[in-house]
Amino acid sequence: MYWQREYLRQSATLPNGGTWREDLPKSGLLGGILLHIRRGGVTDSMLATEKWRLLDWVSDIEVIGNGSTVIKSYTGQLAKYLTWLDGGGGTPDKAFNYGSSTKRFHCMLNFGRFLFDHELGLDLSKWSNVEIRITNDGSSTYFGGDWSVDALCYYLRDAPAGAFAGYFRTEEWRKWTTVADEKKYLELPTESKIRRIVLQTIPDVGTNNEAETTPYNVAYGIELYLKTGLLKVWDSGLRDLWYENYFDMGRDCFVALEPYTTQDKGIHTGLGQTIGAAGLRLPHDGVQDTATTSLTPGDDSSTLRRMTDTDADQDSILAMGLSLENCAVFRFDHLDDPEHYLDPLAQKTVILNVHTRNASSAADGTIRVILDRYVAR
Image (tube, rainbow, N blue to C red; front, top):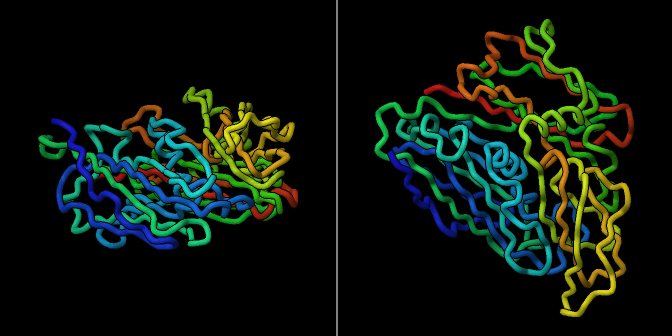
């Protein structure tokens, strides 16, 4: 057996506010797709916007089978986190918004457990049609024309018959806007074994784009039960889950940022909590800057606020913390064999309850629940 890398498309056109669609081949054992999405910005268009990284504008990445069956469906932010969760690095791209130079976003769509999984993946011959779709919500205000997409496919060749026993269906299953002191009661679907449950929690921001609270106030209390409440798996807060993930996987989360923003505007870092940051100035005139990189003391939520005396220059910041892309995960793949994943049919009903803190600052946030399920073929 060997892996063949072959482009599905290079420099495909993705219009502002539109969708790029492409059919995948009719046959082949597809392990994954490496996506490279890029576009130059309009100069100074994102000085005071909440969305300033290219991946924030990637509103949907989908792989759809036979016209209606979801295989993959989630945002660019979640694509970055899931790539990291599958073993990839956390900083494949530099986040920046200065000028009209090309901004980039790389991610992997893995149909197996990880890149180069010889046992699990998508057997295209089992489908009448499989289509990839990528959608952005940009406009000419922010981006100077059509975007470009490269899609590099990874095929397992010379494999024995039945080499891929199944694939992973990964999708944004639920999304809602939070209300103070509201508790959501969710019953998970019983179809297919669950490998992972991912929670993304994003606080609302104020007029200066600063997070109004921490993500763990937006999802203040989390309960996970089996057997319709008879078996308790988790009853604690989001912050505890962050630390469990950190000690479980042992992987630090770093982000590389070059924000160019109006003074005192907050910036989304791509971390749920920033533990430390280091930075330096980037003077555009090539002359030593008298200012230094300054951040608001005590800022450790999902945004940081730059304190600068000018908009003429920008900062380069390396931040480290917890919760890449504001995500946390309940893992059922410590024994990474589908036989050992959570079986929601056998454990029915699996219940996930999420309680928002009783505080006005915790309202108007966004919570997403992403299910990663094994589908046998």
